[in-house]
Length: 86
Image (tube, rainbow, N blue to C red; front, side, top):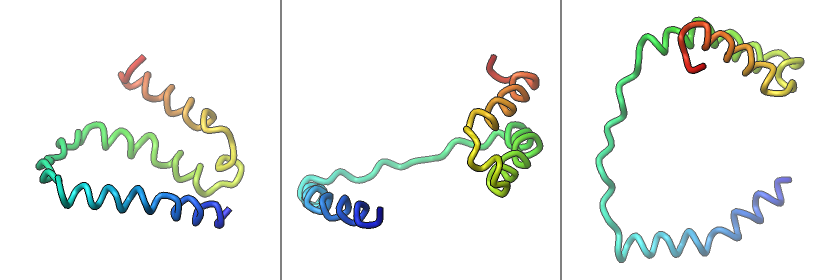
């Protein structure tokens, strides 16, 4: 597996070098980015309703290797009950 990663990395180097050269010769400055403000209500709901399930999924071997929809479906049910997308 690691060999495949190194092979892919090595194969991408000519493209990356070409992109760097293109940026140096024809580069356009980055546009300023202002991230949107966080919705504190949504953050609170996610932390209250979802963080324990995410933690459980990451720390419990039974759920960690379970299909994602097992965790997602419970979160989706809760989301629709609190007024989210139906």
